Image 1: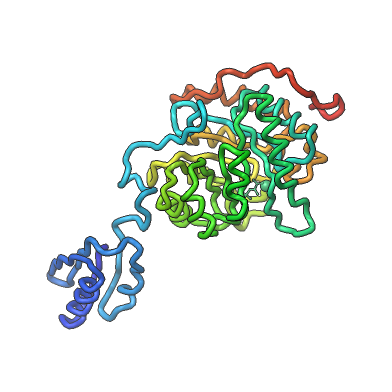
Image 2: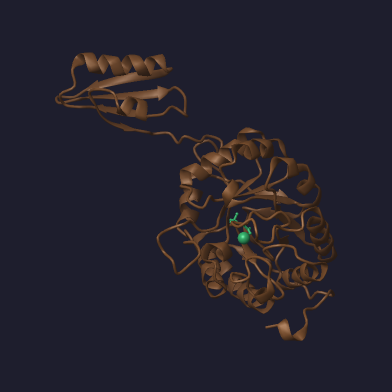
Length: 355
Ligand code: PEP
Ligand code: MN
């Protein structure tokens, strides 16, 4: 860190700051200019609270020069990290699409979702079995029964599974069924959960907190990495702002910012990012163009009757169209995307709900 002293700081004040820093394990180098002293402090603890120095007499300004996170930073690991599950990699040349309903509702619903996801060429079936709902009266998910249905539907279509783990007591259970464990926005700062997930060897998709800064988000990733799980994906899912026309404000700029600060792959969620079906495709296109390594999209065979996230869920035909657009954009930025859409043999939605 760099400590800039006030012009009028006394020698005693400068010495006091130096002593404090030295006590905290920093090596201090002093430059004395004509007007003021500047102290360069190296070493010490990355988690050191710079405000302790800022409030000291004679201090004008304190600037941090190293990030408060280490394992998540590009300074620590300059090359990109790719997170692998089975034959798929998030963070390589290929952009992975994960899609599925907000929650697993019935066997038919999740089977139809898996068919739609496979047909569109996406690789991962996402959906919630444990749902963190803002209201305790909303549908809370099917729990283990939902995970079982989702695994079966995914296996029938050759898809991987991503699902949320809400609580430390569910890690083992969800890991038995899912290839990717999602940490929800509301749990991004559940440090007990993050620490436990550090012990897991299942890839983690860490969703950005509803009002989390990028630094807080990367510090949360650090908890998982520090526990020994290096397979962390960061998911931008929109943040709360003053804007009311969308459910959240999709922070597209977070994608290149995070990629500059961190080697971890970035996943973009245009469904939660906007909360409205009409805006999902434009934001998905933008996120891909901005450099997202994967997209996670809510799709439902009958979104108007969905038990959660219906307004932001697109119809299967909209997913097909979006994938076709993404396949045009990807090569323009040196990426490929799900090149092998496969005609599915499975369950089809009733005609009146197909759009
Ligand atoms: C979800 O995926 O349905 C969900 C609750 O997401 P988030 O945690 O980002 O709100
Ligand atoms: Mn949701």
